[in-house]
Length: 412
Ligand code: C6P
Image (cartoon, rainbow, N blue to C red; front, side, top):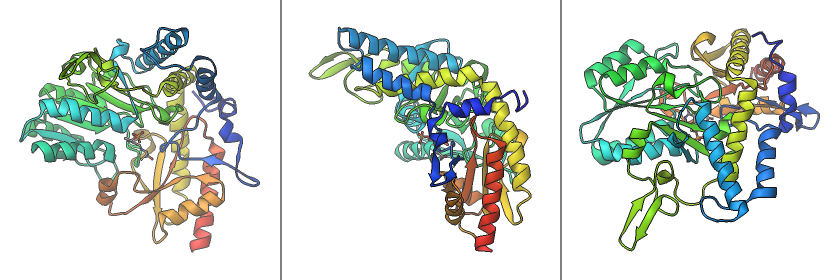
């Protein structure tokens, strides 16, 4: 599909926030969707409608509102399941976000199944969310953490990955599908197949892939997939963990409380069925419904079309960034990555770059992006990051480049 067929102007009209000015007279250029995506009117309306017409707690009352709220909450779960190719909606557990999804697996599957000396294989490009939960568990259970190396050009060293899987025989292989710093899209199916060949369980951090490309749990044959609504045009406060039913059924519960039980006595309880076993307490109901509306929205445009649009944008952005003298851009060539460009100017602090860009109305993120070990690997403390989504345009890339020339002008 060419850019002409992807109607960005029509898409932008769905996002009220994109109509605002960042500063008086300066139109907002939002290039921080990797941190969180903007929300279309359709998602805002779904949540607004829930609070106006339906608001009630779920799985509890026997009144019309409670029944409608429960139906809407479960319908959203079914939409999310279909979106990632899961055949059984009950394989989707609502969580707060990707971070909680991964912690859930560490606390339940990890605690139950891993023993002292077992290896967990991660990569050097993980977000802290797919690192720290395993560090905590490793310290508690005396596990070994090992890492698939990242090459100079920001790809996973696949030869090393297959060798490490064969030699170390990890019990779990957990890795990001798409790096939030380098934009690298990892060959998930190949790594998962190699992990399964030696009997390992696999977990994919889909925080950046599920919002930006078609992701199908059956094609990937992944055991666990973690993702967040807020990065895919949905609200904050809700995310999902997909897990294969047999694994979810064998896992102990995560948090204890209401809704996760079938029966409680003073000294004991019997757990509820999956997925309710993992959803203790009143969940983020309006947010789950907003999550379902976000999935509807993305599907109405098409994930392949979104992926192709972002491919064109990142290819153009990398070409233009290469023109800026003294700018170092991290990560692989456009064909190996999604719409993320992290960069640095020698001698100019990334926060200063972000601040000058902000004055031009351009929202980017500066810092370590919750991936400190990856920045260490590239001998740099922080980067400035521009990230793109379905609503970004080639003109906005041009505004970013003009902003970077301004940075050079100010800081020499
Ligand atoms: N990355 C970024 O600016 P949560 O915060 O739980 O929704 O997502 C965590 C997370 C996990 N994995 C990856 C690959 C991520 O990119 C993120 C979130 C944001 O890069 C916020 S730090």
